[in-house]
Amino acid sequence: MTAVKTRRELYAESTRQALIDTGRHLFAERGYAAVSAEELVRHAGLTRGALYHHFDGKQGLFEAVFEELEDSAVTAVTAAMTAAGAPETRVKAGLGAYWDACAAPEYREIVLKQAPAALGRDRWRELDERHFGGLLREVLRTLMEEGFLARHPVDLLSRTLFATITELALAIAEADDPAAAREEADAIAGALLSGLGA
Image: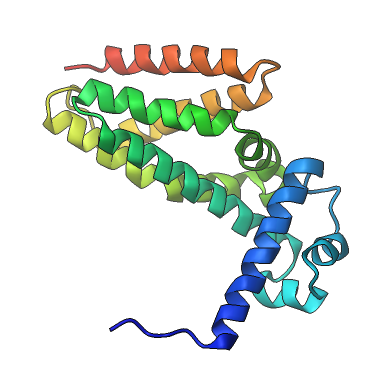
């Protein structure tokens, strides 16, 4: 039986989401450093106390926005891979969905450009690994079991590919022409995976 949420719980959820939506918009538009805590709560129509209650301040809100964008990207990658058939098609679909996320303005601006400075490089990498690392290891294990990839130590291969994919994502984010950079990144990743083929 599903528990019915109280009015207080629903209000807390809507307050939290209003702050995330406001942060997502302002951080993408102006950048983390240029947006104050006062501006965030004013735009959300809330008090500073609400920001500190739900997120412990501006940085906590930024991290929640980051995680929401990462969750959406993981969902898109998983859905693209699930809809594909053969291993090679799944890999191409998953990478394509990830490159699409990297080229999308909010993800590019918040996750790839601002997060390393706003969260600190170590925390940024830790959160990114938390969202995509497990998925990548699972995909690699499956591809090895299906005979698409040669057998390699999964953790080491995952770390190597994760670092490469992250650098390609940053190149897309920093490019003057993200669409062209996306195509180049896709070709490089495809060539690397072909080289690892069974």
